[in-house]
Length: 242
Image 1: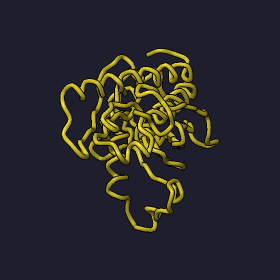
Image 2: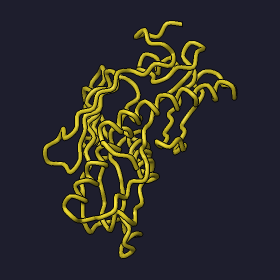
Image 3: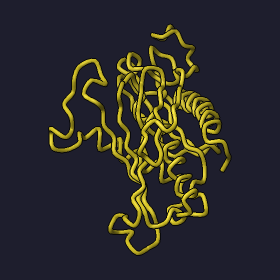
Image 4: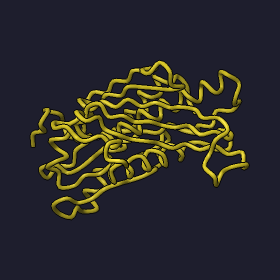
């Protein structure tokens, strides 16, 4: 079985990360996974949390996600002109937010919200998983800003976090699907894990045929391998352990 870009089934695409990509945000990165490119920013909003958290001394992390009109082969309409995010966009931004919250002590964050914005500038499969991986790094930089300015003392982040796609393409479990594979895959799955190996979320579905437990285990093993590679890269960028 030959993959469109010639990779082995267990091979990730090349990953590139540029920190401080946006000048004004408390945290920002450009993450490139193959030809997929996402700008992730983290913005701190002090003394403001959702109504259900007011007065409790706890913080919040939430996300917004969008794709630029020409991030894909044909132009798509901006959500702002449609008046609301697409159903897919809403689902992905909720996914990003809850994944990030899973590795953060919200009480240690204090009564503030960190807004995560993920803007896809070029899409070639795996935009939501790249968004999670890049957003984690933007969040780390925003937290370091809060510590540097003396607004918090303890680092509220408890562990690394990364995500990757896996699937079954032409009968073979594969890691990190590009768009050509994703559009033809019989199974498409997104896996989010912590640096210590804990599972945070698994999103998977059979597109053309049911898959077996054996195939599921093979895909999860591939995902674990890819996420370990991403976490090692994150560790080099951040420069410390949790």
